[in-house]
Image (cartoon, rainbow over all chains, first blue to last red; front, side):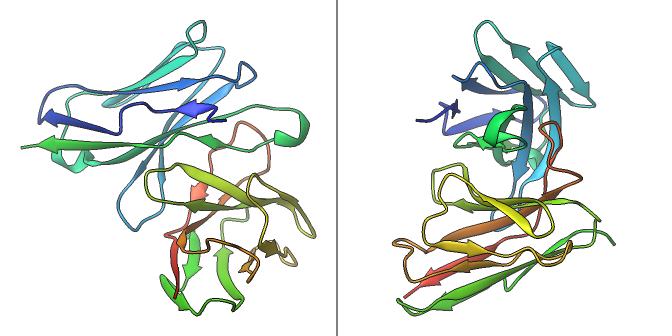
Length: 115
Length: 114
């Protein structure tokens, strides 16, 4: 059962334009969401997070939007740069029970930014 | 420089052999995690430890074992019971095992079983 889904395996964007990466989740208990960026043969690096009490969080070129009613979050990158080309994973967690602190990851979206 | 070290980067083993993957962190983090990544899939949790001398199974613990004798170290053993051991293995840590903590990842070990 895939509780966190990234339905777009890949996304191609022109340099300078906006990149929008999407993520859907099914478990309504999730209350914290994170985005990670990963280059090939390296570990993921944390990008940005959002708590369920917010609907938007911004950090420089990166903004994450959360729509709890739709169980959907998105990552906006503006403007996109060639160095942003990587795999992006969304992840979710919640407090309580045996899942305390555990992150559930989506399948990832490969972002390619063309010069 | 604080961080997470995984060694080796590439590991080859014959089928039927146990192999241990190393993970060390000097971030003074309480919690540590092991994930597995397969092509086209997200990261799946194998084991995690919120404190020294304690650990819990993740979603895909069968065929794996761990120990947490020191705060800095969380080695993962891939046993011969693991049916499909070839994968990219990632170790992570967080300040404590709470739900709202970002996890910091090591560079990973690619294990190939021949």
